[in-house]
Amino acid sequence: MMKHTKHKLFFAWQYEKEEQWLNKMSERGLQLVRVGFCKYVFEENRQDQYIYRLEFLKGLPSSSESISYIHFLEETGVEYVDSLLRWAYFRKKAYEGEFELYSDIDSKIKHYKRILLLLLVITPNSILSVFNMYRLYMTYNILKYGIFTAFVSLLAILVVIGIFKISMEIKRLKKEQYIKE
Image 1 (spheres, rainbow, N blue to C red):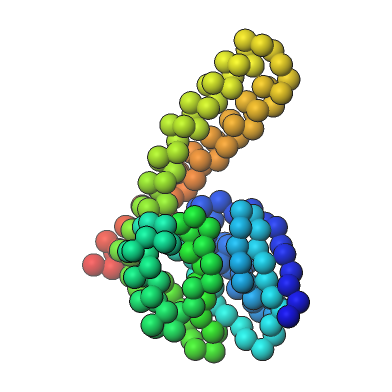
Image 2 (cartoon, rainbow, N blue to C red; image 1 turned 60 degrees about the vertical axis):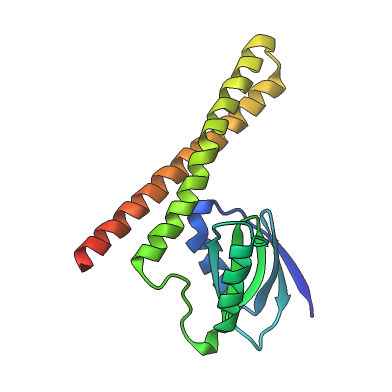
């Protein structure tokens, strides 16, 4: 089978957009077989079409809890494709019907909270890196420190944007949950 490598960047809070993209690739006959940082490896397979879903696991895929969870999903006909750190990529044949990992609003909120916690944990390091790079730039006035400062600042801003977007989605889901009760 012919393999194709695609490079694309998605942020943690864009996992649903990433799912949509993977599902469109599947419709075009490209099935995901491996993931890396901003890297997706597909195999041509027009016979099978899949529905792809992503999940930010509670632990690394090698942890006993994650292994049990992955085995549970596999028993229901879901295929574990690959993972990138704690992001797990799953798929199920499209002809078998709709495929969702989150059966209710509460489980989706818990998933978003795991992503939010990750972003909150890396925020202090991001901000500290900005200050350290800025201090180096101001002390030595070397262009590369200025470029690194701008880059680290952009990353810190993206983390804060992610925190905001995920917080708003959690708030929206809680409101939806309240209305349904």
